[in-house]
Length: 512
Ligand code: GAP
Image 1 (cartoon, rainbow, N blue to C red):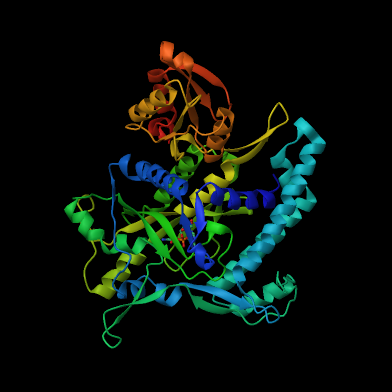
Image 2 (tube, rainbow, N blue to C red):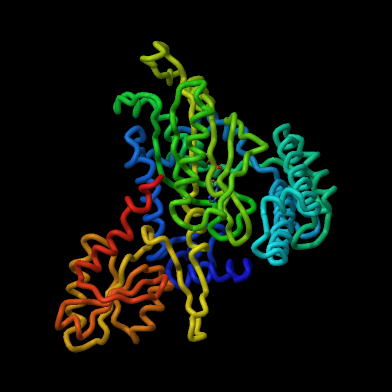
């Protein structure tokens, strides 16, 4: 499927099969806010578990936390969000549409990347087996030109944003002759900063109410609890605190479905380390997190690192793990070396010490922090869009199949009686009762079995078990595999063991 076509299909499939709905749809929805349906909530939970197991359960020096969404307002002063959590915005005077100035420039560079990809595809076709992609990328004059141009643009953008030189960001947009996608004009306003936090109020009367913010990241809940966890858990550095939960941002350019939402979920881990060790831990977490992504089996070529030119106010090094979404490579996860910025700042604003006594160094200090931060909704979109495939079968017919990694599939197995008579439904239901203690199971008796297989393919169910007349005689069932569509005759315990192995966390995460 072409990318645009795939993306349209992702949206319609997500809705049609109960994965994602627009929020409050009966009132025409709320822009960039979405609800997860009966299938989506299960996939989302499984992805969250996959992260939690890898980060918390499998690391004896990482513990969990569930901090509140509402926090004391000084938190956001200390974290820098009140002063610096801004997006540079620009309006087009003709269409009256508002854009993120940096996104306009990044999209321009994205188009250069698409041109590079096209050149690579053409050359690969021309040279066949002899094609050396790395050599082509480093020597083809046109490709090298696009790459150099893109790098230079991003470098300048990063520098201008870092220096808050918004006039230069506007000049860049003008020099690149970027036009408004709606009006097609280059009639731009100046670039202005806009704070992304949602404000709210705590208290009964307008006079006594305290201004609060909905948290724009989960990380600060971890920082303010650093000593609580360290002391009560008797944690020794290096150690991590992980948390998953909602975050809120008043995104101006909210688009691309669940990629950029106003209410979304983050999975963050702050790893507290002795000062001076941040370089090695930065390398460690970059590698570990990339391996975790690869373990999902979506294709290693679909990931790449992108080092930040413009560092956030708290970081001394930062990169993104980008994923190839249907609309191109975009940030999926951030890895940030946050220094002692947050803890030191909370010390200053709260007047409370947030220090650790290091028994080896025999000194007190404010730990440094390495952060890994991934958006659960973006992970959902990555997995969902990569898994959705339209296949032409040998007989010329086509099928839609959602090749979700079995470990995160909402339903692991569907049990289907071949026909709705001869006692087959009762046996199938008894198998459901037996299997449901260990895995998520669906039961389906409507329509011909072929149609039921297709329905489970579209839902991403990796296995179907069919109960037929032979089951009455020898207790065997047919197990049908989603990806190959192959079928095999097994006893129920054999089928159960096969499915358990295929969805076992150990088999998926064992190598990372
Ligand atoms: N604590 C650091 C932090 O929040 P970030 O790069 O702003 O860093 C981390 O966000 C991750 O959260 C991103 O890599 C992305 O996956 C996700 N994310 C950020 N804004 C989002 C949004 N508006 N909608 C969905 N996911 C978002």
